[in-house]
Length: 194
Length: 194
Figure (cartoon, chains in turn red, orange):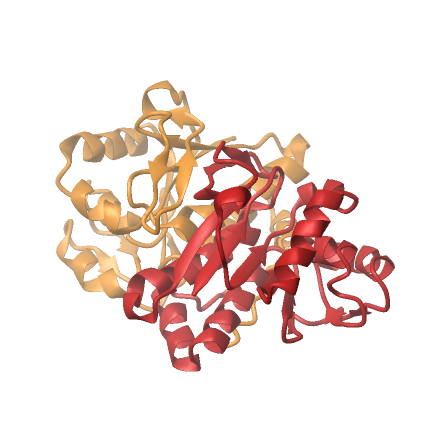
């Protein structure tokens, strides 16, 4: 089970770092499950995220090889991808190859622009719900869901929703018990103080 | 207001990435608040985190300059710091200089080893509560709290608790209203699916 997390200029940090923690915790704590999690970007050069964090990707798209799951974060960097044919074609190719396509926040806008969400239920960051509605064809925008699992495609709401979506992924790809163990490991018993 | 987030070998990714998102979102969205958030490490070389992510720090400790707040993450890398005099001395010097000392997860073990938590209430990752009890002198270990604000020192529970602690920091350093705005921005309405 190879899971790639996409990085690109101006991707939002927690969009990918939340799923990274959940999925890499799973991979590292349960080696017998045979899970590999890695980051992928255009090149191996540092990627500058939306809030200024600089990260070194594990692989380039060119050398990524076969994957089973893609996690696509959001961030202001997604906007310039909506008309980037090379990126949209890559997304379509991965979906056609049977990769489980997941997104966090405005990552779903890129999936929508690629046509992946036509006729499907999907969600995004609350500020981008109207924008999502205007992309693709007949997207059934879910305004209240934390994440939407439509089989081949899973979309999550904004930023921190990626943590919830990734725990759902562990449950779906392995078991509810495993997801509970990962949740306990990262002590995810949220208590927002405000 | 300068806030430094420490990075070191084998620090746990979400321990620092959660507070980073909260605090950097605040800094970027409300420039008039005059907040600067940056990462700091031994050098400017890439830091390899506990789950394998590699990050480029913004500053070295040597060139950091004055800060107002420190966020110290946990991770397996903290264990070898508990008897590292240079690191413990740095922690004591920052505390003596009046820096607001905050930690996430097992970052509090390092604070405890430096003597910062003597006689104070504090917390850590649930798996490290007993270890915390055995460090320092008369630490009043809080086993059920998401985070403990004891004035000069704030300690948070494991991994994801850093998000809650950081939102509390925004409320304490600015206002409850601002913390609510940041929470809304990162759509932190957690719904753990398991």
